[in-house]
Length: 98
Image 1 (tube, rainbow, N blue to C red):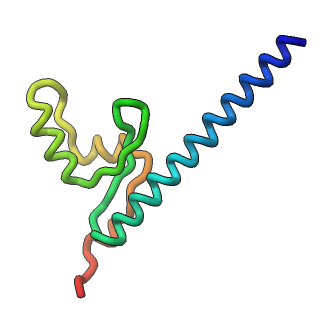
Image 2: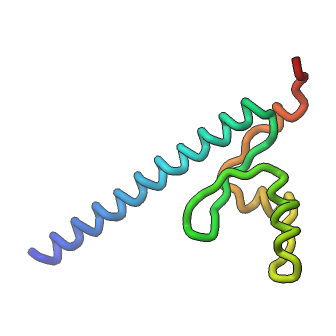
């Protein structure tokens, strides 16, 4: 009886974590899309070191490479795209300004 209750609560915990992560991902995805609409740059949703997510653009590569002199491996656009969970479209990069 107690084993079934324990299994049920562990199932609820896993479901809660999954729902929370989906909501968090959708929030950051919306944030990236809104930034893309306002600036026209390409944005990426990537994991940060503490288990969360963050929205970055391509200037993140330059800043990261300047700070990581010799400590870590330099990042390229290909590595950023592989690490990203979501990237905005490229269409806005070539739009005409009014």
